Every structure is written in structure tokens, then in C-alpha cells.
Amino acid sequence: MKNFSNLYIFGFASVLVIVVAALLSFVSEGLKPLQERNVEIEKKLDILRSVDMTAGIDEAENKPAFIEEMFAKNISESYVINANGDLLEGRDAFAIAKALKAEMQQPIETRGLPIFVANNPETGTKYIIPVLGKGLWGPIWGYVALNDDYTTLYGTVFAHSKETPGLGAEINTDWFMAAFKGKKIFDEEGNFTSITVVKSGADPNDPHGVDAISGGTITSKALEEMLRDCLNPYVNYFKKQMN
Amino acid sequence: MEPLFSTKNLKLLKEPLNDNNPITVQVLGICSALAITVQLKPSIVMALSVLVVLAISNVVISLLRKMIPPRIRIIVQLVVIAAMVILVDEVLQAYAYDVSKQLSVFVGLIITNCIIMGRLEAFAMANKPWPAFLDGIGNAAGYGVILIIVAFFRELLGSGTIYGLQVIPDSFYEAGYANNGLMILPPMALVVVGLIIWIQRGKNQKLIEEN
Image (tube, rainbow over all chains, first blue to last red; front, side, top):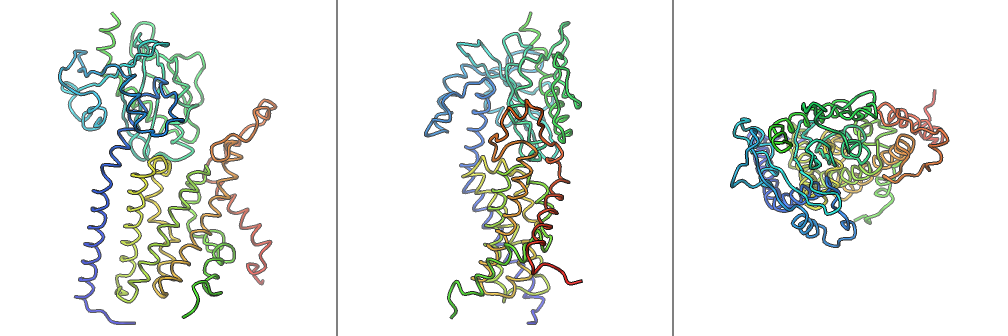
């Protein structure tokens, strides 16, 4: 075996890591605009999916452009409120939704809470709230669409970055998301109940409960927590609107 | 100079598919075989990603093999593998965003796949780039084949679908057939791999031990 001097070993190691680091940062910077656009398009698509407004998407030739167009057409309005339920002027709801994590680290008093409004000629006005939480391996997030009674869920879309395929990752399958439709986040006395994910299976008549995912208990519970934590700050605003 | 696809080189491609399969004979890479084989689609993408990473890092290490100081060779191998994996991940995120979401955490875990490090250490460090490339392709294919077989049965019996499409007709469910929930849990991957090893050893004379 050839003998290498210590100096050579240090030199080799340094050159190797510098080359690798340069290569990776070059690639990462180069691909960033594409990756960010993918994320942005996906968020818009998820918002549209939460209100079932994605008709024609599979036939579209240029999907990103189609999604941009649908988003501009169907999401008629968006605004930002605070935890007291007052409107905050001059803040962009989509910009906040894009950097929701940073916004959620703000103290509750100064946090901006984005709401998107979708006007569906058939099913009426829907209010879409972005949510974000911690799953088992990484972030989970989603969009919750409420009917104009601010109580009944019209639709939900959930997504995740690192949950286990087949188990926790099931949160973004249709059967799981469909279970939220028609559930209520306020009880009859007007108290905020959020939605509970029930491990042994929810009673179909329970207006506030859905089935958990077998084998994905931690993700299911994380999702429940995410909904409670993210919808709670909106409660004041919802109550104001209801009265 | 020997031809590109000499018998010796072809053997590098074929051997890992059966006689020297990384999963069923060498029993390497089991962890990822447990984790991602619940469904067919992530298994296929995982197999392809491992193929790219293993083939390229085998070639890179083989090119550098005379310059790598033996005392730090393992670290050098790790750096090369990690760089390739991150590269694959970045490219997937930019050009195949849906697939990259499907694979989620497991792309990063390719780094820890013992097959890759095993091939770099056992083969690429001592061979020329072209045989190293073939060896990488062969071993990744051997790994991928098992992954896809396991995923096929787990998805079919566990979810009643293949590649996300329902294949068990609704009438079966109405007649009382139920998906086997056990199949989607990790232990069943071990059982399926065990069954594959059993069948393979029964058929392949070379693998039958003497005593």
C-alpha cells in the first residue's frame, strides 16, 4: 500500500470538501428559482383543491400557467386579520401563506392571519385558512376551507414533506381528507372545538371527529394539534363575523 | 484492451441480480427495503435514485482510487455518496417535484444504504471506472428488483392497489374480502423478503450450502 504523508491527507481532504461544497452550492443556487416556483404553484393548487376548483387541471398542457390562471380567477379576495379579529391593512395574504412558519413564530398579538376567499357560483363563498404543524419527521401543512357559516368544513387539503409513505403520508390521500367534509369546528353553544382525530375510529355522527390512520398515530395526532393551534387564533374573527 | 461488454464485465451486471443479490444473498440494504415498499411507486423511484447514486459514486471513487489516502478512504467515500444524494434530491425537487415529495425522507437515507458504501469499498476502490460503473448498475438493479417485488405484494395485499390503481374489484370487498392491514406494517416486508430468499435458495443450486 502506498504511503501518504499527513500533509497530503490534509490537503486531499480539504480539496475534496471544497470541491464538493462548491458544486453543491452552485447546483442549489442554480435550481432555486425552479424549486421555489414549484412550491408556489403547489400552494396555489392546494388552495384551489381545498375548494374543489381544479376542474380541467389534468387536461391542461401547461399546468403551472393553468394553475396561475385558475387561482387569479377563482380566489376573488384575500386579506390578513389579527387575533382580535381586526383587519390588517397593507399585508399580502399569499406572501404570509408562503412563509407561514416565520409568521407563526411571531407573538400572537402581532401575527398576521391570512384568509383567502373563493367565490364558487354553485356552492357559495368559502374561506380558506392555511395551517402548518409538526409531523413525525418534518412539517405538515394544509388548507382548510370553511363554509360561510364559519363553522362547517367545506374541504381540506393536507400535505407533508417527510411522513412515512403508506402510514403518516396517508394524510394527503383523498379518503382521509374527504372525512373532514361537513365536520364542524364550533359546537352548538358556539365554543371552539376544532376537529379530533379518533384512533379507534370516530362515531360517524360525531360532528367534530374523524378516523385516525392506522400505523400513523403520531402524524394523526400532529394533524389534530395543527388544526387546533392554527384555527384557534381565528376564533375571535369568526365569532365577530357570525354575529 | 478488452471489449466493453466482455464476459467478465457482463458478469458484473448479472451476478447481483441473482447469485449475489445485495438484499437476498448479502442481506444489505434491508432497512430501506422495509421502509419504502408499502407502495410500488416510491419503490420504483427509490430504485432509480439508488441506481444513479451508486453508478456515479462508483465511477467517481474508481477515478480517484489511486489518489485516496487509505487512512481516510471511508470518509472520502461518504463525502462522495452524500454529495451525489444531495445532488439527486435537488434535481428531483426542481424537475420532478411530485416524485421528490413521494420519496420524502428516503432520498436522504440513501446515504446510509450499506449497499452503496459496500460496493465503493469492495469494488470501486480496486477497479477501473467502466467495470465499477457496471458493478454499480448491476447491484442497484439487484436491489431494485427485490424492492419492486416486495412492494408489489405489499401494495396488492395491503391496499388492494397496484401503482395506486385499484385492482381488487369492489365486488370482492362487498363479498367480505378485506385488505390485510398487517401488510402495510414494516415487519411484513421482512417476511416477504424471507419468502423470496426461501424461493431463491430452493431454485438456485449455487446458493445451497453444503452441510
